[in-house]
Length: 290
Ligand SMILES: N[C@@H](CCC[C@H](N)C(=O)O)C(=O)O
Image (cartoon, rainbow, N blue to C red; front, side, top):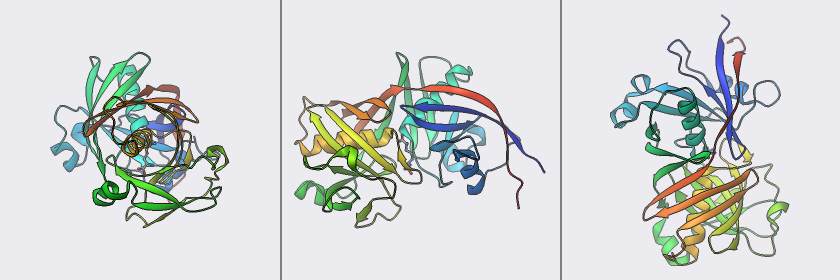
């Protein structure tokens, strides 16, 4: 049987996504089909895939916890694995909902596997309440500021890192001044010790000035990407944590290869803001199932 799907393509600071519009008849995609769609040569090409799912068709555990949300962001990584959350994805998802008149007003909720997220329209982009953040290993983080080490090609020695949970897992490395951020080789996954049970996104961060960092990221399930929204939030929170949590430094600019993201730390919650763009719509035919 030939399956043809409608799709849209979008990005947030060059973290790019294939979006599949609401479609009652669309089949559940397996990992092979997700990787086909995300492949940059044989498919459309993207860091991840987002299905736009009416809340009534979302899995029961998502529906039960969906509050006012009318839409579920079903997120898959480039390799077909499921991720709990995608910060840049929430803005591109919001852009799709707004442009297709699927929501009204300038504030609305979207359901994700990491809970309901409120999105606000701001300027030419969106701001998302990513919700609560937490230190993955608070005792070690409080005592030493670090809880793991990361080995990466381009750094001479393993580098201390801090693990954070933003709904999805992050390991943030503060780059020493003598290691060049641009010189790191992120073509292979950095090695984390101890290895997180469910894997981790890994952010390499250079503090530029108070309230500003530069970052590169290796994403779980996708490899190096030009941006990661939850990663930017983790990078800002970790840098703020290492600085002693100063109350006059709650707003951060995070520069990534794909542009600039804003992060605002609000107690145990965190907000992410930035642009979102839709660049194409079309149809695509899936390879036949074996
Ligand atoms: N790019 C995203 C994060 C996508 C999921 C991540 N790769 C994971 O597996 O947790 C973002 O903008 O947050």
